[in-house]
Length: 216
Image (cartoon, rainbow, N blue to C red; front, side):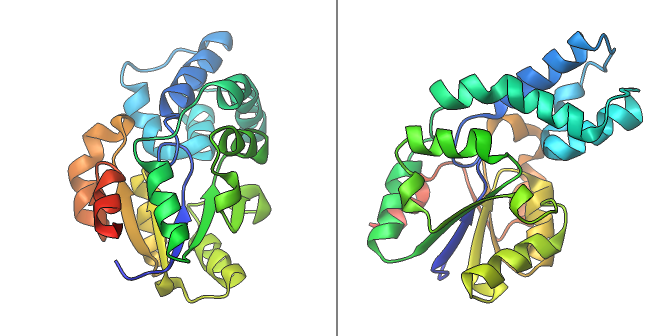
C-alpha cells in the first residue's frame, strides 16, 4: 500500500463501538414498542445510522423522522463514547507509526462530533489527525461517492492517493466508486459479510497489527 494519505472511518474501524450501536438501536425499538425481526442486527449492521433509521421508517413502521431516530440513538450513546468505548487492537500503534513516517491521517464518519471528538480525545489519538470530519461537515452521507471526492479535495490530493479504511461493506463499495484505495476492516458485527467484503476491498485486514508489521 503506497498511499501516504489515510482516511479512517470511526465506529467499528478505529473504536470497538458497534455493540453500542446495536444495543441502542434495539433499545429505541423497544421504547417505541415496535416489533422487529429476529435477524434485525444482521439487517442493520451494514446500514449505519442513516440507513438504519430509514429502514425503521420504511419497513418497521416507525413514524419518527430519520433525524429524530438518529439524534435519539446518538444521545443514548454519549456516556459510552465519553467514558468506556476503547480503541480496537493495534490502532494506536498503527496511527503513531504512520505519523512518524510523515503521513496524513484523517477521519470521516457518520457519527456526530458530540461522540466522535470526546472518544478520540479520551483514547489519546485526536491530536494525531490532520482532519476529524463527521458527515455533517459535508452535508451528505458515506453512501454518496461525492463525500470521498470532497474529502480528497480538502486534503488537496487526488482520490487515488487516499487509502480509506472502513468496517462497512457499503461504505467501501462507495469509496471504490470514487476511486479511493480501500481497506476493509474486520469487525465482529460484520462476520456474515466477511467473505464478500474480502473480495470487494483492495485490502482486507482482521487487525491493524497486520499493517503495523509492514510499517516497522
